[in-house]
Amino acid sequence: MIPVKIQTLIVSGAPAPSIIVLQPIEKVPPQANSRVVPIWVGVNEATQMGIALEETRFSRPMTHDLFLDALTNLDARIDHVLISDVLGPTFYSKLVLRQHDRLIELDARPSDALALALRQKAPLYIDEDVLDRASFPYVFKKSPLEEPEVDDFRKFLEDIAPEDFQGE
View 1 (spheres, rainbow, N blue to C red):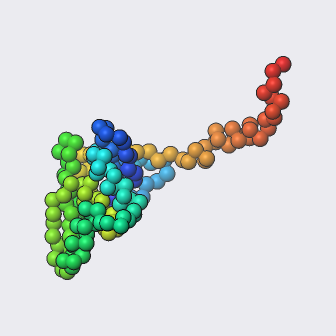
View 2 (cartoon, rainbow, N blue to C red):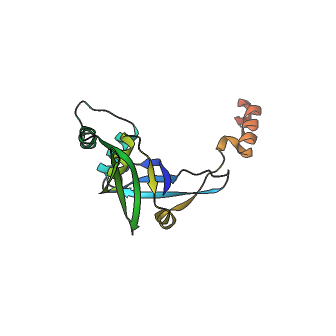
View 3 (cartoon, rainbow, N blue to C red):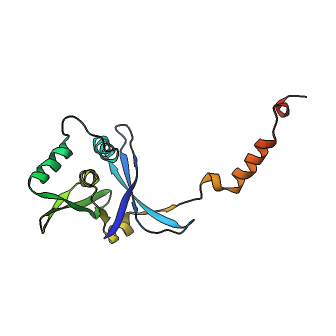
């Protein structure tokens, strides 16, 4: 199991799918390739993920909050989520609950499992084989503010005057 985090959530309007982007939590040297795993979800699922990421609370419980309230009343909580398989574009996950010393594994859609885990700040994992099969390389570049071209452009701007734009 490889620990992951949600790097970003890309929400689009229907009928286009939205994307949850997972990234392994690993030390990557500067300018090295990392990996990301895009999981395509529907607009409703992306909305729930956004609510979880923003830690938004409503006066009435949403479905995920109701589920977590039920778990709490059963002396259980989310132990972790595992993205366990991928077949074509479809990802599979396990929502692992802890009730005292007992672990309970539930089959769950990744979007639901991730949204629930975020609400309880539970760890997220991906199976190493799934990471190998479903990830894409991602290059972390230097910040544009660190690029030499940006420094040169700033120096150019410092020396420019309004008169430089007047026609002859």
